[in-house]
Image (tube, rainbow, N blue to C red):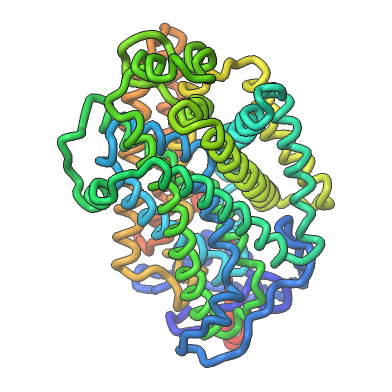
Length: 571
């Protein structure tokens, strides 16, 4: 396969896939391709279907390839904003307000860096969907052996369940606040499930309307949290300094751990799977390299704009609580609210001690109501409701894409929705039924740690597949992109592992728990080693590619490789 050949899609009539045997398809070390197409290449007329959209794909207006067009940008606008909702879920909001309480504005630069890092990884995920016509989970189904593929699916599913618990419970808390505590948490969870399933079928009435609905929810968050930012009269100069100056006198014990927690909360593993699938909603002719190049460019611009909006909303939340609660203890909060209508609720929510104010999204609503009046609590709850509802819906999509792709499910749509929702919602309902609102802060930290553990299971396959010239052709990662993406991936993984170890040090572990941690640690390291070996082969390491052990135990003998029909015929 030459680097200059055109790309074909492995979906529908636009492309073809080949079954490549690892022992016969490996090229020499000097070849630019890891795999060669076989003689048995054939077209597959698969019916195009998706859990995200049930109708036709969005058409792209014609125009010159190299000229910028706002009409084209508008046509591509949608998937990036749905992706950005994962940066605004209740787990992220809670991490934001905690960082403001602990470190004031001094971690805003970490938030900015994490958002830029997320943009770099999302760009790679987009390339997979645009260039190959398959999303990340579908590519993993073709590129990994059965056992590691199932393990990979289970790890990603754990991340989705953890994220879903934060999102569903966050929505339930918003309903609890808006109903004057009349609707208990577990009922709020059930309400969230029902309305999520209802909204998910909006795509039957056109995909663009569904995307517009998500845009409305993001706008609601911006107005709600922006209102509180204005009311709080946050000092703008301090906010700007916090964004661009990575040192401060405001650092206190726990600041480093909180900064690491921001990275773990912002970059979610299942979001890479989600974004790679959402971009398939546009009608792109993958036989035309110019169309692919255009799509990659416009999707990147749209993702950058979407993440800019999400970053600004996150800054609103950090800044409000940095201004209102930094330097205050639990007792300070109780004393300030002593003569307000929120006094009894505050006394129940906050322990009477001199520890740094212990805050979560429920307590945050009470504090805002105490400081600025009941309307601030309701505006806050509306923002959390929009964040929880939108992220729950996109989380449902992610769960469907992941399960369908990894397991190659061919179920009818309502069965897919019901099954994936049930898998994710049962743990959330259990926690909501048996937990107290005051204990949810610790649960959020645990869930962030769990999701941080799963990050390699999205980042490594993403880097590997976008670096495989047999899959990506002209659009394969360049040397700079490879080095940058690998460095970023392993940096985030190292940071998240530090976050997890630091949290473990704060827990009193029994002998059985230590044994479990050791066993899981061995499995975790071994599985990551497997993924890294697979990635190195995709990066073009000819020595590994020719190794019999790697061919037998690491590479999939029936991998689906994008190939060019003309080049196959010429062979």
